[in-house]
Image (tube, rainbow, N blue to C red; front, side):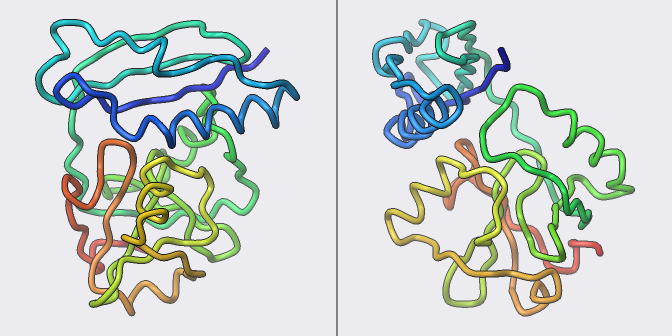
Length: 199
């Protein structure tokens, strides 16, 4: 049976956006295994003493049951440039542990730090984050995402970003971009200049 991953930010000992992670886990188990999820994250996350300060990564491997829980310090990657890669057949609606398709695409990034995947020309995600663009007034995120990220869900629910159709030809209309995931948000993320997104 294939496995899924839930990666949760632990900040000063506290799990962040647990509601969004629980919602995604519930949906994944119901849709993939046709059963109700009996795993309650608030009951299984036991933050160790060494993770009570700073930012840590809680990595949960599961399917219909928990297979592994680990805690490691979060290591920030300073991404400054993106290479647009077309992958019209890629699908990643659930956070699978098998990431071979992304690993193959990463070989194509040339001198860029990270890839920005398109499907039929429309912007989706990077290899490990969702993406948002700033138009001078509002942060927007593609409707054509691959994975429904928890930070993306949180920002949409709180009207911090809005969802739009974004073609790769639209990128030059924006002022800057930013990668978002459970560790990278509007406070902790770094801006990527539009001229550092290569087609």
